[in-house]
Length: 123
Image (cartoon, rainbow, N blue to C red; front, top):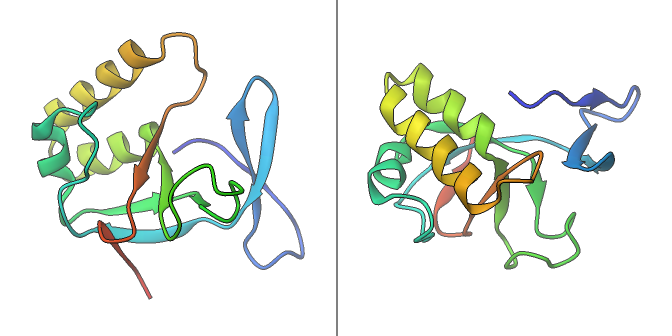
């Protein structure tokens, strides 16, 4: 998982890295990927392998001031890859990491947006 900084006395909030030394307050949520993610930049085999997996979503659309569609969640690629490895989908995890690095080779962190119909919150 991408390391975060715990904000003491904040009911589970953390300071999560965006890259280039920037951090944003977030409250991680566990979600289950409920359908194939609609992101053509991620290989279909990876998107299919993610369905049914519990993953850590770090940001909401509101936390990102509308930079992503309303109701969506944003996950670190590294966290998704870790969930894939735990589910014995190591090849899919490697494929995801390579695809993300190819899309944005200079970025410190890579992100995937889960649309509001692509996940369910874990209670």
